[in-house]
Image (cartoon, rainbow, N blue to C red; front, side, top):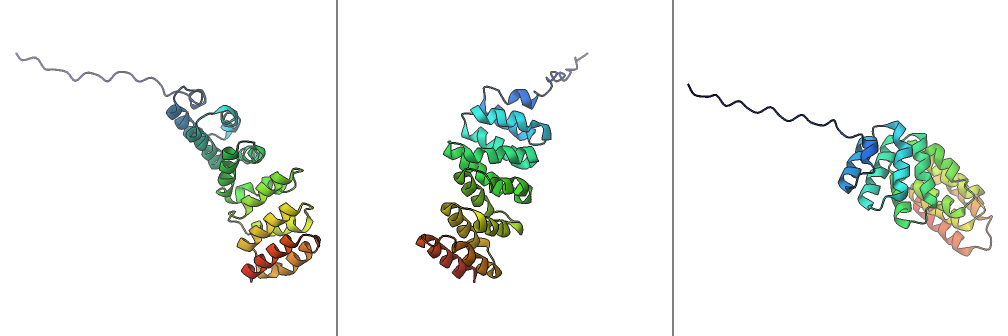
Length: 198
Protein backbone atom coordinates (compact mmCIF):
# COMPACT_ATOMS: atom_id res chain seq x y z
CA UNK A 1 0.00 0.00 0.00
CA UNK A 2 1.37 3.37 -0.98
CA UNK A 3 2.29 5.71 1.79
CA UNK A 4 0.39 9.02 1.92
CA UNK A 5 2.75 11.90 2.43
CA UNK A 6 1.37 14.22 5.02
CA UNK A 7 1.67 17.96 4.59
CA UNK A 8 4.02 19.13 7.33
CA UNK A 9 2.44 21.30 9.95
CA UNK A 10 3.60 24.91 9.90
CA UNK A 11 6.17 25.76 12.52
CA UNK A 12 4.69 27.62 15.45
CA UNK A 13 5.20 31.35 15.09
CA UNK A 14 6.59 33.46 17.86
CA UNK A 15 4.23 36.16 19.07
CA UNK A 16 4.88 39.52 17.42
CA UNK A 17 7.47 41.61 19.21
CA UNK A 18 6.15 44.44 21.34
CA UNK A 19 6.69 47.60 19.25
CA UNK A 20 7.92 49.41 22.35
CA UNK A 21 10.79 46.94 22.51
CA UNK A 22 11.29 46.93 18.74
CA UNK A 23 11.78 50.69 18.80
CA UNK A 24 15.28 49.95 20.12
CA UNK A 25 16.02 47.16 17.62
CA UNK A 26 19.34 47.06 15.79
CA UNK A 27 17.59 47.17 12.42
CA UNK A 28 16.37 50.54 11.14
CA UNK A 29 13.58 48.73 9.28
CA UNK A 30 12.40 47.19 12.54
CA UNK A 31 12.48 50.56 14.27
CA UNK A 32 10.46 52.13 11.43
CA UNK A 33 7.87 49.36 11.64
CA UNK A 34 7.67 49.80 15.41
CA UNK A 35 7.05 53.54 14.99
CA UNK A 36 4.26 52.83 12.48
CA UNK A 37 2.63 50.39 14.91
CA UNK A 38 2.93 52.82 17.81
CA UNK A 39 1.06 55.47 15.82
CA UNK A 40 -2.10 53.66 17.00
CA UNK A 41 -1.15 53.87 20.69
CA UNK A 42 -1.93 57.21 22.36
CA UNK A 43 0.15 56.13 25.35
CA UNK A 44 3.30 55.83 23.22
CA UNK A 45 4.15 59.52 22.87
CA UNK A 46 6.77 59.44 25.60
CA UNK A 47 8.64 56.43 24.23
CA UNK A 48 8.50 57.83 20.67
CA UNK A 49 9.91 61.15 21.89
CA UNK A 50 12.65 59.37 23.85
CA UNK A 51 13.67 57.36 20.77
CA UNK A 52 13.60 60.46 18.58
CA UNK A 53 16.07 62.19 20.89
CA UNK A 54 18.86 59.76 19.96
CA UNK A 55 17.72 58.14 16.70
CA UNK A 56 20.50 58.44 14.07
CA UNK A 57 18.52 57.39 10.96
CA UNK A 58 16.42 60.05 9.24
CA UNK A 59 14.06 57.44 7.81
CA UNK A 60 13.25 56.27 11.33
CA UNK A 61 12.97 59.84 12.57
CA UNK A 62 10.48 60.51 9.76
CA UNK A 63 8.45 57.49 10.86
CA UNK A 64 8.46 58.68 14.48
CA UNK A 65 7.38 62.20 13.50
CA UNK A 66 4.63 60.76 11.30
CA UNK A 67 3.46 58.62 14.23
CA UNK A 68 3.30 61.67 16.50
CA UNK A 69 1.38 63.54 13.83
CA UNK A 70 -1.12 60.71 13.43
CA UNK A 71 -1.62 60.43 17.18
CA UNK A 72 -2.44 64.14 17.36
CA UNK A 73 -2.89 64.21 21.14
CA UNK A 74 -2.01 67.29 23.18
CA UNK A 75 1.10 65.48 24.38
CA UNK A 76 2.12 64.61 20.80
CA UNK A 77 1.60 68.19 19.62
CA UNK A 78 3.56 69.49 22.60
CA UNK A 79 6.42 67.16 21.74
CA UNK A 80 6.46 68.42 18.15
CA UNK A 81 6.41 72.05 19.27
CA UNK A 82 9.32 71.42 21.62
CA UNK A 83 11.36 70.44 18.54
CA UNK A 84 11.01 73.95 17.12
CA UNK A 85 13.83 74.93 19.45
CA UNK A 86 16.12 72.13 18.28
CA UNK A 87 19.62 72.94 17.02
CA UNK A 88 19.13 70.14 14.49
CA UNK A 89 17.89 71.97 11.38
CA UNK A 90 16.61 68.80 9.72
CA UNK A 91 14.61 67.83 12.78
CA UNK A 92 13.25 71.34 13.28
CA UNK A 93 12.07 71.61 9.67
CA UNK A 94 10.59 68.11 9.74
CA UNK A 95 8.67 68.99 12.92
CA UNK A 96 7.30 72.13 11.24
CA UNK A 97 6.16 70.08 8.24
CA UNK A 98 4.49 67.57 10.54
CA UNK A 99 2.68 70.31 12.44
CA UNK A 100 1.57 71.96 9.21
CA UNK A 101 -0.09 68.73 8.13
CA UNK A 102 -2.02 68.31 11.39
CA UNK A 103 -4.70 70.96 10.81
CA UNK A 104 -6.79 72.06 13.79
CA UNK A 105 -5.16 69.61 16.23
CA UNK A 106 -2.27 72.04 16.73
CA UNK A 107 -4.24 75.19 17.52
CA UNK A 108 -3.94 75.10 21.31
CA UNK A 109 -0.20 74.46 21.30
CA UNK A 110 0.24 76.93 18.47
CA UNK A 111 -1.20 79.76 20.54
CA UNK A 112 1.30 78.94 23.28
CA UNK A 113 4.11 78.81 20.72
CA UNK A 114 3.22 82.28 19.47
CA UNK A 115 3.79 83.57 23.02
CA UNK A 116 7.11 81.79 23.57
CA UNK A 117 9.88 84.02 25.03
CA UNK A 118 12.29 83.04 22.23
CA UNK A 119 11.59 85.08 19.07
CA UNK A 120 12.97 82.30 16.85
CA UNK A 121 10.46 79.86 18.33
CA UNK A 122 7.69 82.39 17.67
CA UNK A 123 8.83 82.71 14.05
CA UNK A 124 8.78 78.93 13.63
CA UNK A 125 5.27 78.87 15.12
CA UNK A 126 4.17 81.58 12.68
CA UNK A 127 5.57 79.49 9.82
CA UNK A 128 3.20 76.69 10.81
CA UNK A 129 0.24 79.01 10.27
CA UNK A 130 0.71 79.42 6.53
CA UNK A 131 -0.19 75.81 5.79
CA UNK A 132 -2.70 75.34 8.58
CA UNK A 133 -6.07 74.63 7.01
CA UNK A 134 -8.14 76.35 9.67
CA UNK A 135 -10.07 79.65 9.63
CA UNK A 136 -8.30 80.77 12.80
CA UNK A 137 -4.85 80.69 11.18
CA UNK A 138 -5.03 84.13 9.58
CA UNK A 139 -6.59 85.63 12.73
CA UNK A 140 -3.73 84.25 14.85
CA UNK A 141 -1.17 85.72 12.45
CA UNK A 142 -2.91 89.10 12.62
CA UNK A 143 -3.12 89.00 16.40
CA UNK A 144 0.58 88.19 16.65
CA UNK A 145 1.42 91.00 14.22
CA UNK A 146 -0.54 93.44 16.37
CA UNK A 147 1.20 92.66 19.63
CA UNK A 148 4.63 91.11 19.05
CA UNK A 149 7.54 93.44 19.80
CA UNK A 150 10.06 91.70 17.54
CA UNK A 151 10.25 93.02 14.01
CA UNK A 152 11.26 89.68 12.49
CA UNK A 153 8.26 87.93 14.04
CA UNK A 154 6.03 90.64 12.57
CA UNK A 155 7.67 90.22 9.16
CA UNK A 156 6.93 86.49 9.33
CA UNK A 157 3.31 87.32 10.16
CA UNK A 158 3.09 89.54 7.08
CA UNK A 159 4.41 86.70 4.94
CA UNK A 160 1.64 84.49 6.29
CA UNK A 161 -1.05 87.13 5.79
CA UNK A 162 0.10 87.63 2.20
CA UNK A 163 -0.89 84.00 1.65
CA UNK A 164 -4.02 83.57 3.77
CA UNK A 165 -5.12 87.06 4.87
CA UNK A 166 -8.43 88.66 3.88
CA UNK A 167 -9.21 92.22 2.70
CA UNK A 168 -10.90 93.30 5.94
CA UNK A 169 -7.55 92.76 7.71
CA UNK A 170 -5.80 95.55 5.79
CA UNK A 171 -6.57 98.37 8.29
CA UNK A 172 -5.28 96.21 11.15
CA UNK A 173 -2.11 95.48 9.17
CA UNK A 174 -1.53 99.22 8.69
CA UNK A 175 -2.07 99.89 12.41
CA UNK A 176 0.31 97.13 13.44
CA UNK A 177 3.09 98.17 11.06
CA UNK A 178 2.81 101.77 12.31
CA UNK A 179 4.35 100.52 15.57
CA UNK A 180 7.67 100.22 13.70
CA UNK A 181 8.22 103.63 12.07
CA UNK A 182 11.96 103.03 11.67
CA UNK A 183 11.66 99.71 9.82
CA UNK A 184 11.14 100.48 6.12
CA UNK A 185 11.46 96.84 5.10
CA UNK A 186 8.43 96.05 7.25
CA UNK A 187 6.41 98.74 5.50
CA UNK A 188 7.49 97.25 2.18
CA UNK A 189 6.43 93.76 3.33
CA UNK A 190 3.08 95.16 4.46
CA UNK A 191 2.56 96.83 1.10
CA UNK A 192 3.28 93.58 -0.71
CA UNK A 193 0.96 91.65 1.60
CA UNK A 194 -1.87 94.11 1.14
CA UNK A 195 -1.49 94.01 -2.62
CA UNK A 196 -1.82 90.22 -2.61
CA UNK A 197 -4.74 90.26 -0.17
CA UNK A 198 -6.65 92.88 -2.15
